[in-house]
Amino acid sequence: MELKLYSVSELAGILKLHPKTILRFINEGKIKARKIGRSWMVSENELKNYCHAELSNAPIAPVSSGYEASEGRIDASVVVEMNDQDPEKASRLSNSLMAMLNSEKGKSGGTRFDFIYYPDIHKAKYTFYGDPGFIANILKIFDELNPTKGK
Image 1 (cartoon, rainbow, N blue to C red):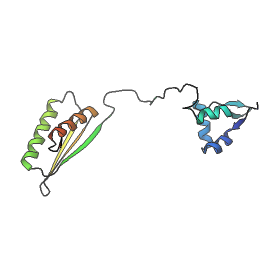
Image 2 (cartoon, rainbow, N blue to C red; image 1 turned 135 degrees about the vertical axis):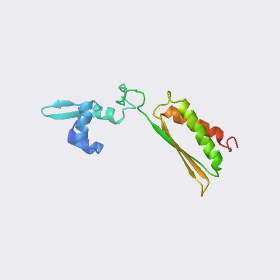
Image 3 (cartoon, rainbow, N blue to C red; image 1 turned 60 degrees about the vertical axis):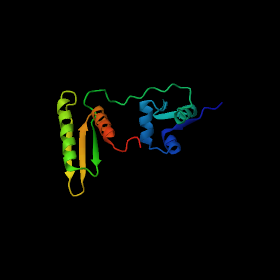
Image 4 (cartoon, rainbow, N blue to C red; image 1 turned 120 degrees about the horizontal axis):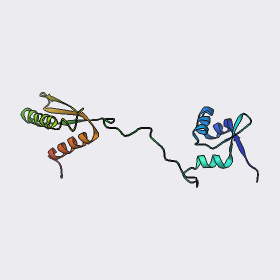
């Protein structure tokens, strides 16, 4: 059985990638290659393993995202708009949300809340910034306030 070897430039043509990308994949171990003289060569089997990694028997190494878990690394935001909002009810809701935020200060530091009321169109806009858990709790509150919930 003849062993078929491919050069970096041949692989670049086959995979429709830049030769530097092929070299980077070789250096990262994504494509197994061997150096013959001054050139990297990839066997036909290794090319198949790379192209069909999900079908190959070679175990796939876990991919690290490069991020370590740390508190405060992820922030989220949400904008909630309520149409046909009475100005007094909008203000009362805003004050209640602000009181909730102030009471949770220790747990949800770094949160921010903005409130805008548009009297000409009777619309209230509530904007929240904070960690994803805080944003999820805010959305649960507004979900409970939704008059069409369950319809």
